[in-house]
Image (cartoon, rainbow, N blue to C red):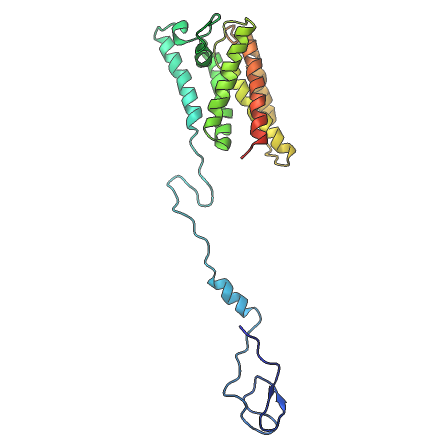
Amino acid sequence: MSEPDLFVVCKNCSSEVSPYVTECPYCGQRVRKRAPKIERRGEEAGQKQRRVRAPSLGRIRRDEIPGIAPDTRPLATIVLLALSLAATVVWSAGVTLDDLGAVLIDPGDEAWRLITTPFIHDNLGYQFVALLSLGIFGVMLERRFGLVTPIAIFALAGAGGAAAAVALDDLPALGANGAALGMLVAWLVEDRLAARRGDDRENDLLGVYVIAIVLLLLPLADEDASVAAGLAGALGGAGAGLILGVFRR
């Protein structure tokens, strides 16, 4: 909107008069039909502000709180846990560990056993600890980095740990202690890298360290849990955590 003139010249007496009057106060000559409208300070800005439409949110889903994104279901982690539980059910039904794909001796040309053996447990206590750890850190990794991440880390740490156990002749190598340690260490390394960048998420690391110690001590409770598999799995998880920390979303 244009600003009013500072003054108006009367055509009759050539006097300078206020632009907000309609008649010259000196000679009475009419200078304009109507005075310009006086804008109150901030009125124009207020009108423009009222014309701006507030942003609208999309349709809220049934399980969603307005303004807060709903947690995604950790499908990959659920599948990994379900496969391990299914293997235990099949073993309980009478199928041997060897037929399930366990690494009891050097697998030779049956390299596929390196992938299947992390799903196989012959001790429910060992399985409970390993799967609980997998569930905790698998869910956190999946929700932050997507469903491919826990699968990739499980394969890297689990199969890599089994391969290390075979190479070092630390057999048998059953269960997910290597995969669980890999998942835990990957999460821990990425979390610490984020904290160094200034993104401290204030996680309770004491509980993380306790779980790591329990996983490392599992071979003392079950001779089928390989020390080499656990350490190699933790090393693989550290590498995965570095990659996630550098190429974070």
